[in-house]
Amino acid sequence: MKNRVITAVVGILAILGLVWQGGILLTAAVFGAMVLCFKEYKAMWNHIDVPVFFYPAFVALLAVSIAAGRYSLLHFFSILILAFLCLLFSVLRIRGDALPALIYTVFGVLYIGIGFGSLLCLRQVHQSMYLTPLAIEDGIFFVLLAFIGTWASDTFAYFVGRRWGKRKMAPHISPNKTIEGLIGGMVGTIIISVIWSFCFGFSLIQGFLLGLIISIMAPVGDLFESYMKRYCDIKDSGQILPGHGGMLDRFDSLLFVAPAVFLFLILR
Image (cartoon, rainbow, N blue to C red; front, side, top):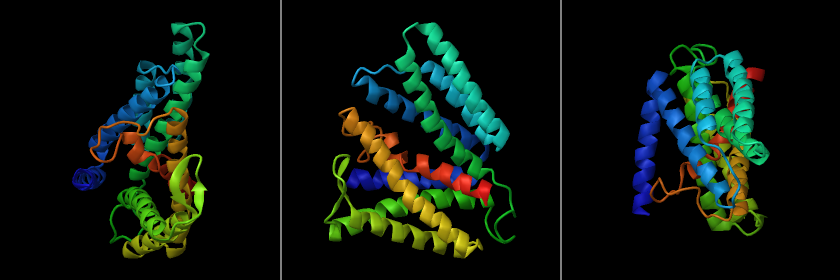
């Protein structure tokens, strides 16, 4: 428990500092997280003898992170399509029977690249588009909302589920998760999102809607990664974070939350 708390505190402080700084430092840190997550993703599938190519994915993720860091929606999705085509070409040239490797490699790049890339795009949201002039930068607000909402979902779901949880939500994927915990996580996330919106002059109605979106997408992201781990017959995606497991274990929910928040801002 001590290691878990220390890791959490250090991680939160590091995230706050990087998000506040933004720019190339945040882009580099997010790219590093992309690479570590993909390595864990590769190791998971290799555990059941499913091939995944690392180096083509590394180049694709680098291109995606650079494009996302520029906050150009056109560049971001253009690079994603280009990365897909380059992966198709490179993997098929490596070996003629590389179709399984192609499928799992491309999926991993899209899964990790879109999730983290959306986070970088959120940080580059322009000032005064959404908040009052006296508030913090819009980009900082939305990135921290994604993080805080995700943490709130996990925290409230854990404590409510531990205290009142009885009905299993998805026992074949994650036996410890309950319907009561899910509801507690949703309510807690919405409350925290509305409070966060109120503090910085963001629309309370839209804060409520974003809280609702986060409260749905966070457990979906968690369950998706849990399903992959169960399918690959492993407990944790890695051991890089003492007391927390791997990078994917910590960012699985955010990989679904960040694109959902970014899509909300595009479509609003």
